[in-house]
Image (cartoon, rainbow, N blue to C red):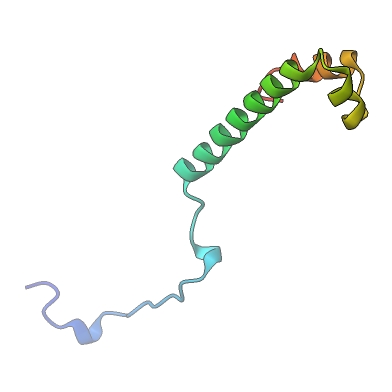
Length: 76
């Protein structure tokens, strides 16, 4: 057996800290997708209130500002 005498093998031990771990790329992608989804829903909500002058006055926005924001692409 090539490794029968394990006393001669160096033992490498590393502490496990958050710096040693890579970010899970699937979780990062999921976070980005959820953020895009939230933006789409918020912009749809803005579009829905664009013709209500009372709600626009409560928000302090003009109809043009709301339409401009609602028409932005979801990735911005």
